[in-house]
Length: 241
Image 1 (tube, helix red, strand yellow):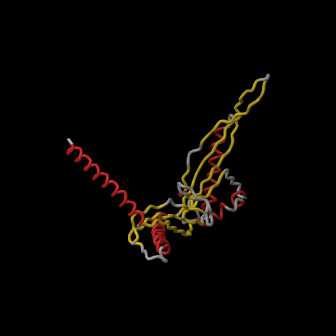
Image 2: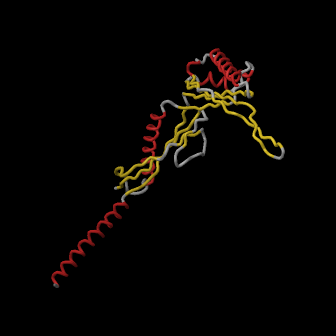
Image 3: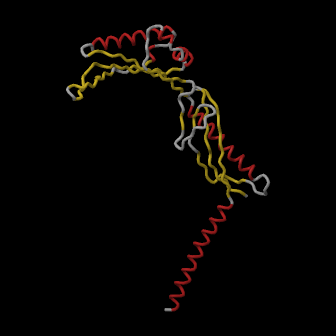
């Protein structure tokens, strides 16, 4: 019985030693690493533009057909003027006209009543083009269309870059190099040197207007600016020797 207890105790001590030895090894191992965050930034200019716009008009209760005709004229006049400045109308994605009823509230005999007053018609269309300058010349000077009796209810420009995936790969590689450079500088006044990469994780990409401080844990993609800046971090752990 005593021998049995002795064996159990011995096995327990061996297991405990292995566990403690594993923790000790891990602790020593962790001391032989250095963690740094590399960063890379690059300015670039968009090469594609999305122009989204909306036409709208109103029609009385019994004038819905006239409203449709008015919307057709607005689109026709717009396409004609767009073609005159060298933008192909076939590039536009034109959505169907939407119609919403409009109401007013009146008080009659002390009661509030909803009264049907007519219709509001809207049509949304957008263009994606590389001819950024031609569109900007037209959109950023609204009098050019206004003087042609073309009224746009809403207009919005968004800027994109067709090689964004390649650009992301490029600056991520630069961020990794930057991480290594930072690690080497941190160890410059010691007898230690970096050995190899233990782990590496990239941060999210922040695509902003130039000199912006806007960041997000989910990443940022600013489309309102033609001139942009992209940045990313590389969280890197190196072994040292």
